[in-house]
Length: 171
Image 1: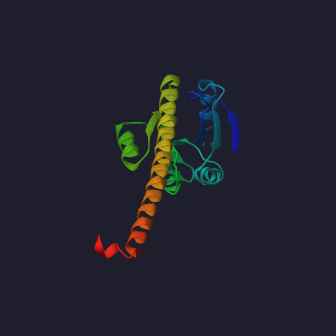
Image 2: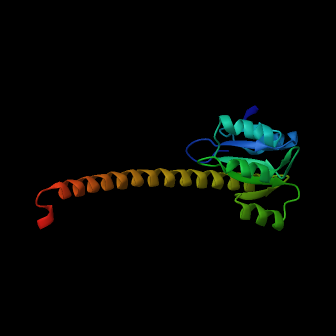
């Protein structure tokens, strides 16, 4: 796992996992990304899965074809993660078919190589924002669920106490 500091979404830097056997991708990204983004690098799906067990990421950039599989293998591995990262597939052979397949199977987007710096920063920043908003929604839903559970518990307790009352049958 090679760690290199490399544009960031607003407020804080982005942390992403880049899964690619091409060292040229990393060199290309170093020239595109501002310094407050942190990239973890994996050369294949197995290494990426190992890194994912230790670190959570909002965004994963994955080459279409990997030495030990492809982007779909990684997408399957992400299904078990509670707040899964958004997967962006990269490829020199990006076309409408790949884009439709990625979106239909649950990926976020496709970026063609060589990377266009403006498109790259825009797509990864939007993915990061979407992931962050999804996380906030989940947190709000948990708070509401706790509140509703608490109200339900109190209501059930009052109902049980009311039914135990000697006058309960006369009301």
